[in-house]
Amino acid sequence: MDQAITLRQFNSETLPSVGVQVIAVTSGKGGVGKTNVVANLAVMLAREGKRVLVLDADLGLGNLDVLLGLVPEWTLEHVLDGQKALADIVMRGPGGIGILPASSGMYDLTALTPEQQLLLQGELDRMANAIDVLLIDTGAGISSNVLFFASAAQEILVVASPEPTSMTDAYAVMKGLSQRHAETRFRLLINMARHQREALEIYRKITLVADKFLNISIDYVGYIPDDDYVPMSVCKQRAVVDLYPQAPSTQEFRRLARMVVQWKAEHPKGGVQFLWRGLIARSEA
Image (cartoon, helix red, strand yellow):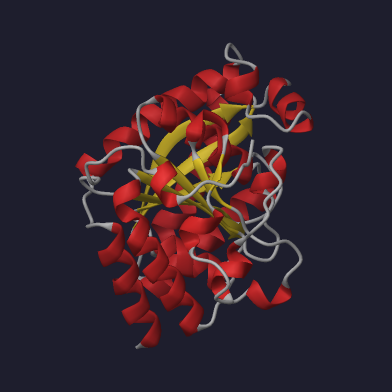
């Protein structure tokens, strides 16, 4: 079956979405399992009845499609050079989630131009009524693209692992967003932790430094355990929540998804159109 789907097919409901949750998932460094978090969270949100679209925003080194065993015919590269509309490249992933695949190895896309930013913003605006949740899988680090996509979102979910370098770099990405885009609130998820105590200790260390040097708040949203089922599912190019429904990591992804569903009511910031246009205005100032 053709993996590409049209916007009409993706939007199976006729009523427009009340509002789009825009959640950027980012990390200070690579290797913390950020893309795996995005994929499994997306599937679990779909099981909660949400229409989910995932934007692979690691534009030069996208690999969300590889993680899920998909082979895209078209990518964001074709949208940004004017060959395709965003709706034309949407792929159907597990659980019916929509995926906007990025290019791999395209250096020219590692820093979007203002014109490309406007184009992407307009394309996303046109898809707003087709979705309930937009998950943005950013690249790692503090590049201009990472800061651009993260500051466009209502929620910024930072993923860190128990490695000391990951903790340092998670702090760095929050510092960059705080100083360059006046972001003051972040969510922190600890991935690949051995147990809750370890995850809470990592959260404590990061917030200790942040409280001292930055005027931000960091909400702890839990942890994903370091269980053997996750690498097993990665090798099979499947979501762990699909392949191993009883895995400890699957249980935590389910808990996280149910928490995410509540975020919108707690911290309303406007719709996707307002957010992206506001960001463009700031970037051009």
